[in-house]
Image 1 (tube, helix red, strand yellow):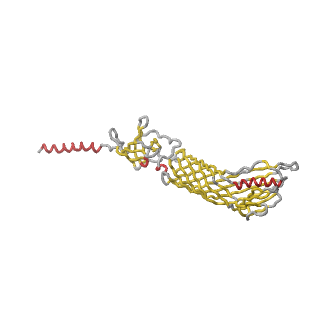
Image 2 (spheres, rainbow, N blue to C red):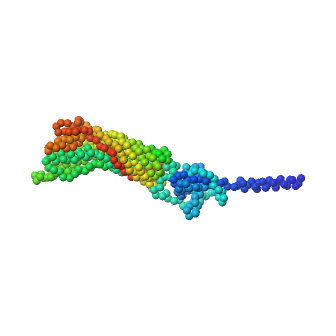
Image 3 (cartoon, rainbow, N blue to C red):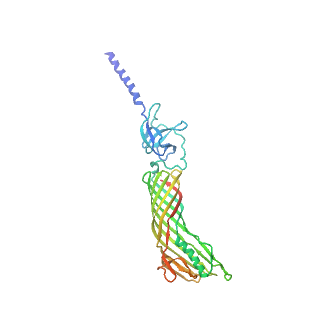
Length: 391
């Protein structure tokens, strides 16, 4: 009886001894495979934490544990060293359990060995849907766009030649063509997914060209006759855009735009002495257009990027409604409301010259041909360079 009472405590001690190692055995690490093109290994489980290392797609990692949406993993460097850090669950896929031989998982709250944080490589874009889904981007840029203002350019040349014909003098010099506008652009976009974003933008565009034409001066004239011209255009297109990102740092953009455009002309004729005549007018027109573009982002720091974009725009507008005025050195002054009309008028030499003026009614009468409302073709190349801020 006494012998049986001694065996019971011994059996309990042996059972506890066998059970404890089983309970203390570390869980097998989780095996992960990187699915993003470039995955950031971070110092802490936080999107704003410093990047320890960038890991290429297809790399297999071992995760010792998971903290919320972040895995604590180990990564072997090319020199054989091992670093640890956190990687977001959206960048990897679980492929199984790793072998446990020689592996000891860090205790919860234990310090994580990590290499010195590395700066993000210049030009590297966001590496995953998670990282780009700081969903808003603001782009501020400057640039230029080409277009065709044939009616306004032809009229500037025509006015200079018409004035020369009235003097009976040949002109010297050339009229500079208006074919370029400068752009200031602000865009806000919202990322719907890793590949698609919607944007709303506005352009401030302006262009002008000033020219001065002189005429051969007879000996009787003390002042060289001159004609000055300056066609100009400015507008505010509002764009609704769709962005497609085949790569995190490269995109295609398609846009539909509504254009509010103002066009103007200015002519000044100095025939001789102190006499002069001046015409100026402006009109406003509205139209719709489309634009296609491609661009790339280059990282300058956390959430700050430089971007470059080139595209092509299709749009044309006419029917400019506004006013025009005339005044001269004798004190005469008139103003007329109406449309901007492009037409041909017969000069003093019997030839026809292209002119553009504001008029309440369609120009007509003897020597007037082909009158129609002036137009501008906005189709052409666009180029934008600027900064993008992600927030």
